[in-house]
Image (cartoon, rainbow, N blue to C red; front, side, top):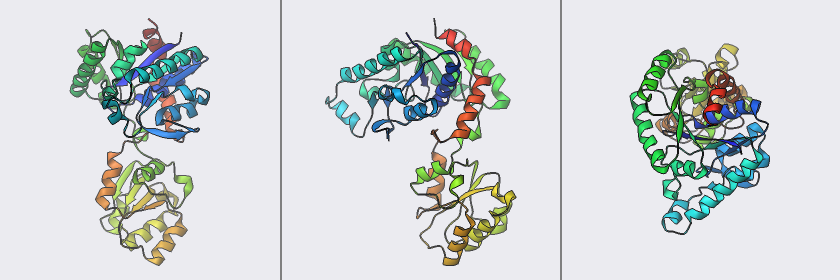
Length: 365
């Protein structure tokens, strides 16, 4: 039988997938056969000729698990599925059967199996398959990931624990993630005190890492639905700062920080020309990650020529400046197999932050 760990969270974007990557990376050193499954996949894509959630597709590519892909996401949530479920046109028993069959096959193929939920304990309830219900169905003990902080974390954990316990699933470990470095020790001390009688372990995960939280140019292009022009080699460059180029040209240049994405309207010819010329200099290239150029006003012909010849990556859109800014800031960057820098960092940090032997023992009982 495979060692099974169900990865849950207190909410979205707490770091379930980075935790899964970390555990699989470390497990591969001990177990010859590792596996991954996301029983319910709410974000389907086309991958290797099939519909599957983005996370299993990414995990399969990173760890070479493509041979298991048919079992890594047994229930894919397509548009309209929740309505059909509520109307009784889809059977809960059928969905449970798909999940059980997939896990049974993976248990035969794997020695260590990570089962990743989709959000907080109640996600999937509309299908009759909340995370808490699925964990109980599979007999998989739970590792719950939460964000940083104290009061809100305790509140969220207690709320989520209630549903897991009601469904008969066992939460064995709490991983506090995205911790503020200077508050890490104090936060962990108080979290352990808060849950000392809860019957679960409490460990710290990753500190907040901008390199993990911030998007690449490719991700921003995906969010905005427009292509990147210019230097294609910078597609995977990570953007650490987003600034609106509304001030004077000199002021905008003075305010540049490392890896800045600038939002500059199409009518700002002087600023567009200046940034294009500065991009040729190494000290400024390190600061200018790229441009988003919103606006319905056409870019002047000469400015367009200078911009194109510079190689400066840019995205052109007719969206409003404020809409562009909000779209970028409201998006939380998701990992893709192409995010090599982020994945290498996750594996490196996993060695420091995750005591795999402790976790393995905790989930072997």
